Image (cartoon, rainbow, N blue to C red; front, side, top):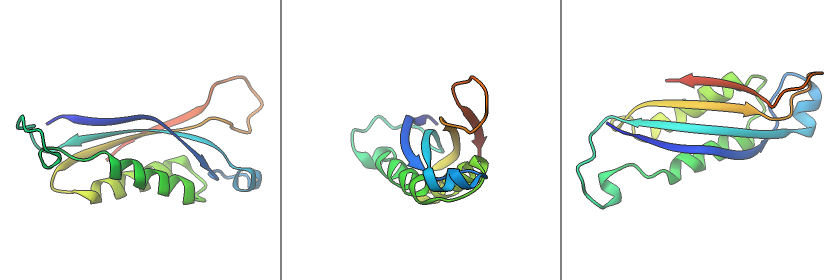
Length: 117
């Protein structure tokens, strides 16, 4: 087994409980870690691994098109769709979702959730 990581993917999203979050939107960052269910055999063909291109594409589609209230729901949806891409060869998916601009009166970088499934 080994892991494929896509770090700090950045998208524009409309995620949040507050109405203005759905209208204005915000920057969403996602880290995706896909754990394979097989050992790498030393080959040099894409069939010897998993392509990370579909991982990026489905994550972008989900984040950009979603209007969910919770980033937990967003992370859950990403996990389900990525796992379904190749359920036999994907052992687990871990997602970190960050909202960069959060309507909280305080000083901090971002909010983040981490989920594995």
